[in-house]
Image (cartoon, rainbow, N blue to C red):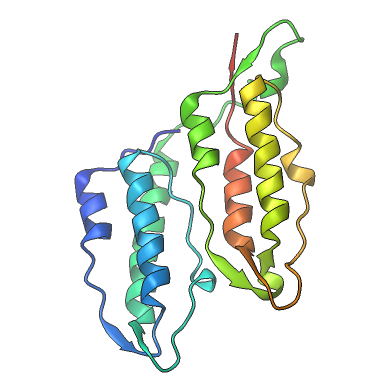
Length: 189
């Protein structure tokens, strides 16, 4: 699904001048998320909603003002929402499993790149998923795509929190990605 991002959208994200304050969001985390959003926009791909739960807060050091970061992310989410409303809904009469085994599924290079290049914010605790489990699942997805097979059952996959004291991928970001992954379809040949 293409999203009609313009250079104005990209420039708004890339050139955002966010005020700073002591105890704000981590500059590195916010800059990394904004860079990822700009890359998705330049590639005309949908931008998943970025949760501020994935952003660390600096207690003593200077960081970006939470209100400004949240307002920018809400603005991007509103743009994406408007694009989603304007695009036609997916055709439920055309699921990926409509072939009777005679045709080969062909996943596009763009779809495979999207899965291969996904980057999740890191966090700790129960709002995170074990990185190894998520990466192993994504490897299964990429292998199925490369072989022209049906994707593993996304709706049944379960990930566990990382071991105590270790970080993992932000659970909300992973869940949003999986929801989007469930909507893509191969070309049937």
